[in-house]
Length: 133
Length: 207
Length: 289
Image (cartoon, rainbow over all chains, first blue to last red; front, side, top):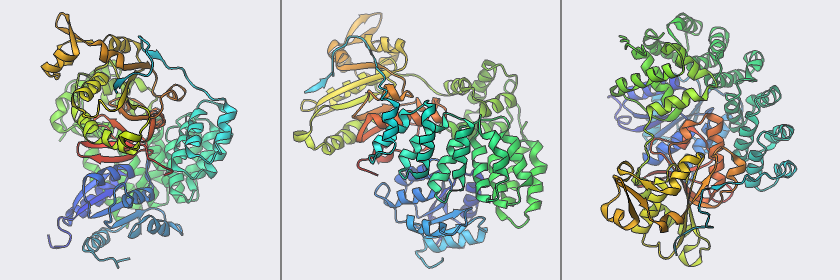
């Protein structure tokens, strides 16, 4: 891999849509990230209890536990993760991004996200930079 | 100390159901204690007279656990009144409410089909995205047909990709032309192109 | 490439599609190595539900309200055995982590009032609640300082009658150490052993439907519930209601064990998952969160 910052960082892709998980997993996997998947917020919380992820890529509209509640749970004592979170949503209403940051996300993107942008953002966030928004 | 038993019946006990009066439970729907509200909503199972109060509570309930219990009881009614009143919340700014309501509607195969013409024509594309989510899980033989229609006609790419995601588990080789047409309709959407390309080889072998 | 098998006529693509459906429905994942097994069992299900091909059967399974089709499928593809000390690692978790935490939460040995309450639901023919009793008596150092109530419940009165009689053959007993067999069982002939009276009378048995909220209201303040391998059988609304009823039966801070392939993440958001050294358990949260 060319990107030394990305190689090996562990990412959890959280989305109820199998097609979105495949897209994000293919992009990030191709860039050298080690990617796991979860189909809703609860699965993400359970996965994060067993593995220290370096980055979470989280959808908003999911059954069982939505993206905001998921990020809140990741940040709470239940999991206690301070790894960066990118939320990716179809929603582009005013206030959505604020809600994401309030929950503890580091970045809010609106679908569809071009492949190179997602990889760039993931690489920067896992390299410890927080000024990409 | 050690192992003890509560009473001493020799045979397995038949549990006696406890049914507090409906008026008591209806009153508790507004109690400040979340456990009482949650239990009241569950206890109102199957009581048609409680439906309006439960529907009204959906508008104001801010505890996710209580909302979950209200929706379990409401969804079991599967009537036009319940489905129509719940569908209003698909447009909610609260993600917790709109996703919980979508999950409830996905368990209402008797009443949701009548709502679909309105939902598919909703001016807010976010409502149509939620509709694709409902159709993904709705146990109804026509769900597939409705999703085909969304893939074919919906003007918003995020609705089309949502409908394709919901469609793929039941899609067959017959649906390949429709998927290819969707890519042509939105040539600039990288995700849509990727999704269809990834799905085609698998569809080729399905009956 | 697609290869069709004789009976079910599943192509590779159909097999993949089926496995994705079954994973989403139950959390159980089949690798391609299980192909022959899965094909055979699906064939049986197609026959049982009077369809003549995979496509028709699979469409009906996914889109109809016919719950018995899903039940038959899960029965065919899962192991329904019950025997003493099955999934023993969860009893390890109970002894090592859960019970110490329960006692601490309830104010410690000196200050806690009332017994520790443990529920096995469904308890089937009784192997699970009696296993809990055996492990507590043999391996929990606090058993002489704490009162423990063990309850078993099931919807089926026939299995409850067997649980009450508590006589078992080799199949049920193969994991029970010889010394425990000698100490806690009585030989009743024909290779069968009956749980001794002291333990039998310490386990309270109830008949209840886990999906019936009014009946489940009788179950309160349990510290530990084992609810293994039953929620996967229920449809969406029934499994959510069953989860609510379990929640209502638990003390805040109480622990819930599901079967090893099960996850509450497919069912309900109301519990808090907790990872113990022995695996995942669920807690009813304490306080107002």
